[in-house]
Length: 116
Length: 109
Image 1 (cartoon, rainbow over the protein chains, first blue to last red):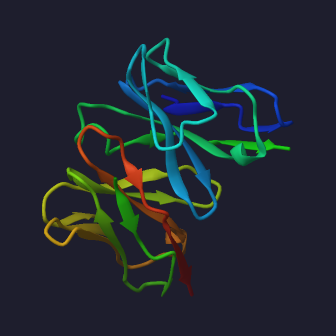
Image 2 (image 1 turned 30 degrees about the vertical axis):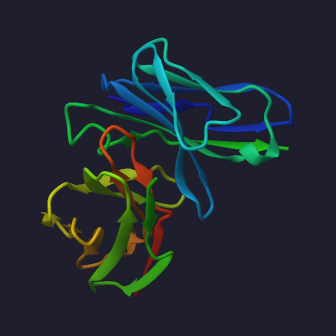
């Protein structure tokens, strides 16, 4: 099993460009999440999904959109990138059958995004 | 809302024991989790406490006191490979985890 994978691993954008980050998991998890991590800020939740076709806002959703058309995939979109979105983006997934749903999350390797 | 406080940095000697504290404020509380993250890597799950007391997993133990809104991660027989950042995270039921800002542990010889 590959676990949680993310595409791409690195990306450089110019201000105003758009892009989509792809997250895929092969563990049949119901829940999926997108976080951003900035130095000294820990992990901050952008959006999450508790099942196929459902999404919800997290702590820092502005400037991002998400879609969960298939259970195994969770896409994060940046419609008009800004330098403030320079960050490392992590996708994670978890199963509601274990440890009160949200606690044991499995993370992907991350996408390092730079917006110039 | 929820907030968590943990020290930003801790340094300890190889072979020693180190404790990383976490205090939290939250409306509603289900449990406290701990994650480890090496530089350039992804966070990995270490432990989860929903009830008061100590949970032991090998060299790592995690403690929770719900009445004090406090928990800690205890690392014993420290090894160089334990140098990493450690995050506590709170689960308040139907909302996803909220993470602390992390504690950077440096293990020195």
